[in-house]
Length: 463
Ligand SMILES: *Cc1c(COP(=O)(O)O)cnc(C)c1O
Image (cartoon, rainbow, N blue to C red; front, side, top):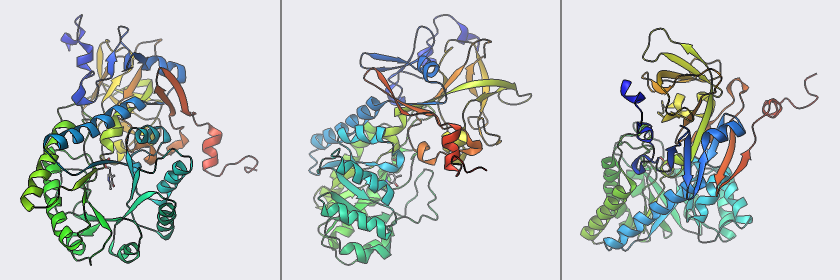
């Protein structure tokens, strides 16, 4: 620890900022030891924003979304060209990863197509379509169990001219969807293991390989889709899925010659812990190489490729900031003190609790300060509301009297919002959008009254 206190220490490096492969290339430490984000010639000081808008605070950076998507589409298209691959590339953004308008609109304008999982998500797409935020080239894939209202909405949007493709999810959908007038797809539950958080033993999604290969010929079957799980740990797993999926694809195509698109789903991971990780550039190159070689060997047309990497695109585009309310000494543990924050892991960063998600948590101010080993506690009265980095510790500055300490959680843009809750009726973080040198409030801080309403407490009721 002594070394850290030396003058001239490279704090940017110490906090693992400014590194492309760790998705921190836009983050830096200012001369005043505060956390900054750089967008072109705009530099945002996150400590100043936390002081100005209060905490808990979620900051959305649309330029990070745009940058990531542009790069991803660029990689696939470039490698297709380099390797002489004849199929086309399509990115479909899986809406469930983050349905906030502030995420969806920039992605659409950067060339994303969509993938939805429910009638209610599709209803948002309908609103976009009616509001002309949508051009008719954008294709929408529909996953998830098809209730009657879901199928009705799919058919309504198709009749209005939307390029919308239902994906058969279960055998009981086959009959109704085979009568569908547009293109359809089928989801196959590949019987291979992946190293991700996905309960493979009891997977219930899509058709088994046997059922899929037993389907009668469908003239409008265009897409074979599979999805192996989220936050896949190794690139090897991704490649094995592609190889295995391609094999099923060729068998299916013999029965349904209209099949021309392989959709490899989501699952590309994020280096949440800022350790060495596989890269989109490397993986996209290898996927195209694999598909090119396999289809040439099988003597079939190179399939069009759909990729639905959601977490990969959106997680780094949001940061959540909390204030440390106070510290409590821990007598005997890996960490010396609890830092109690003015928000909740259980409410706002649900995966901390649900799947033991790790985060990169760094100070937003005093980034040159002397450090302490800490555990973080949320403000609900629940003993599960905590983050201990898996029982290890989080290094944060020592608390100074008369100065608030803020902590920033990076990569919070994926999944957390739709899972968020109101345990102890805490307010959700305020949401601001940081773009082009200006700050816009996207969601105000919830008040006691607005939360009370969610629980039926309207004015005049409580007599
Ligand atoms: C959840 C999901 C995705 C996105 O997964 P990520 O791990 O976020 O990339 C993509 N496709 C389908 C069908 C999904 O269910």
